[in-house]
Image (cartoon, rainbow, N blue to C red; front, side):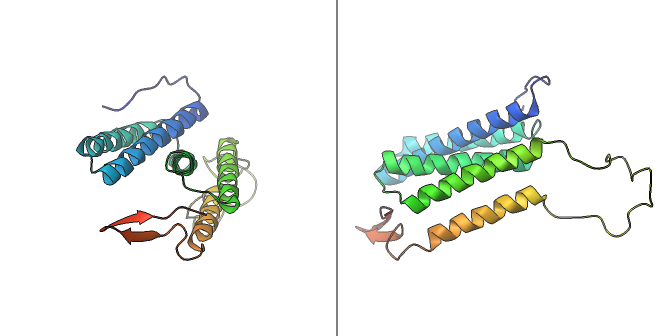
Length: 185
């Protein structure tokens, strides 16, 4: 049922392919949703449904070969960049320097996350405590890895940048009986 890839492929290649495929499917699905909403097009809505079902299938398949956090973060970052570019070049939205800076920060943070997650872990092997010294006491560490926490902090900062825009800029306005977004300035 799921996509099968050769076991000989490096995990980093599989993760990168998964990120790109997921972002492409999601971006085309977002475009289909936008066009379905703007033009009230049933065929575009149907295309969107098919794309998002396909997106789930690719996502589930990719998790057999790659880790959840890097694949998901990479997909979302590539998607966010794609949506900004789609809005800018297809729908004519203006993108501020601050928003381009936020995109650059997201790309740098994603590169860092992927590089850190692909480095071998330093320290004792996972099979048990080190040969010298007593075993560690206390509860085991829990929560997301530090790299995931750093990426989440960057995404919070970026979302604050988007939320702190002046009223009316990038907000939704009701015109002619439906909501539409204003151009970003």
